[in-house]
Image (tube, rainbow, N blue to C red; front, side, top):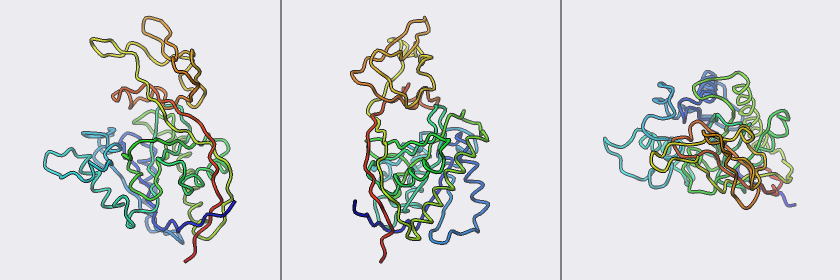
Length: 308
């Protein structure tokens, strides 16, 4: 397979606190900021506390979810005194790290997140053909064999902070309760970021990275909890057989929910899919019990720095 030659990843940003109660990223960014004077040989590193007001209050957000505010409509909307804080902050971050879709945009954003679901370490992206992101994920899979590292894509309009960069992704690690920082989860994130920066250093130095096949998960369906027709309150929880089984295979007829009255609700789909973000705490308000993803193989080519 022909080697794909790509420009240097010269400007990198590591962001934490996009959700103010996801504390691994908050504390890792604070640690990185202590080393601000240290400079990588061949790229610049910016650290950003994305939602400082939410971090201060240890809340997911103040008025609205910041990580859903990077749509084209919101980024281009006029701002007034009544504009929600996170929408204003999204425009500020787009100015700082972008503007999105321009040559001035940061080359790579790694936005740090936690989930209460049993997701392991996930790269969350909008593309299954961005060779930089896929090679970094492959590097972590190789160097962190004791950690489940997966690559997940959403085929929707970009709304995440990471979409501001040319090569952006969220690094999502769980399970960890919101408002809590666990040593094992923090250290997994710390090592993942270290390996990412190590890969960028090597790539910019001209190292050839061999291609291979990779598994990629793409979200295809969202499922809400069963709800009461009048009160709209949930009437069931995730079935015990499905709880913590993120990325397993859910077959038609498998237990999906257990109602509070003790009845099992089965999966009514027509094909086996992979459940993700199962019983994620932050998704209750979004009416999401879990999402379902398809798994496919992607052939990732060999890549190397494009010399001028």
